Length: 114
Image (cartoon, rainbow, N blue to C red; front, top):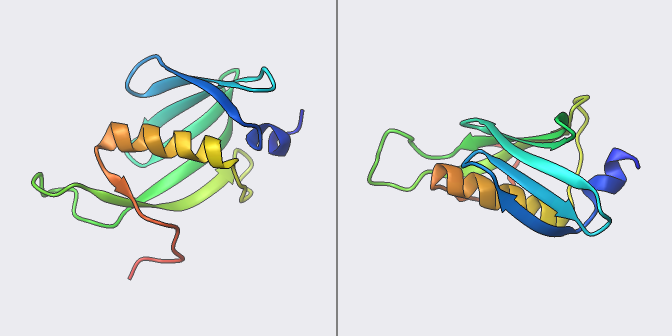
């Protein structure tokens, strides 16, 4: 199965393994993993091989503990560096995992930060 077909599949279930690691089961039977690799990146993996990296960019100060951090998606690329798209359900899973990990909110896509 090609990466583009796999990333367009619908998510059947999500299982939390740790705060940074999640197992996904797709409706077509494929198994994927979501992993928060660092403060600004979430990877989608298959059999521990990276398929996609979603890079987030902060839109607010991360030093103010009284304010919820705000992020936007800066890039969404395959392991080879090409821009890609995810199914709405898979993207929602990435957002939910990242929001849980950072206790932040994610703003709509933008072309740049002013």
